[in-house]
Image 1 (cartoon, rainbow, N blue to C red):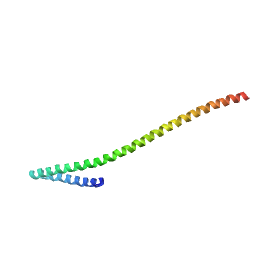
Image 2: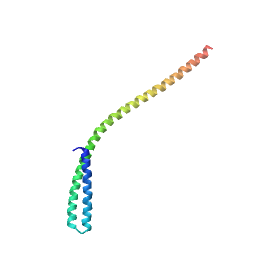
Image 3: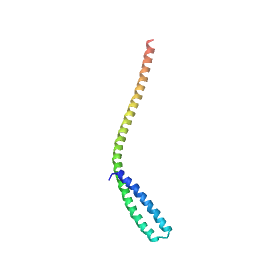
Image 4: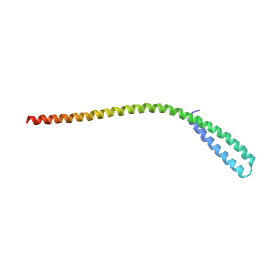
Length: 115
């Protein structure tokens, strides 16, 4: 069964569970204790089935999460490498600017000697 089918089934089972709660409350209100007890047992049984379905859905989701986590780890490592590369280039650019400043000083000194 596909996860989307499980979700639809879970929705319908939840409606059934809520109706059982309502019916149980009605029975209790009208003093139909035996019927309320039977509905309570059925409600508990249905809850077990719903919980099992939820576990299956969570397991499907966790399985997807594991694969996605691996993809994100790879992406994050690539981002880290790109950031380090950019930082190196920034330092390189800063050093080039410094060197250009030293060269400009040299040109200025040389120009002062020529005049």
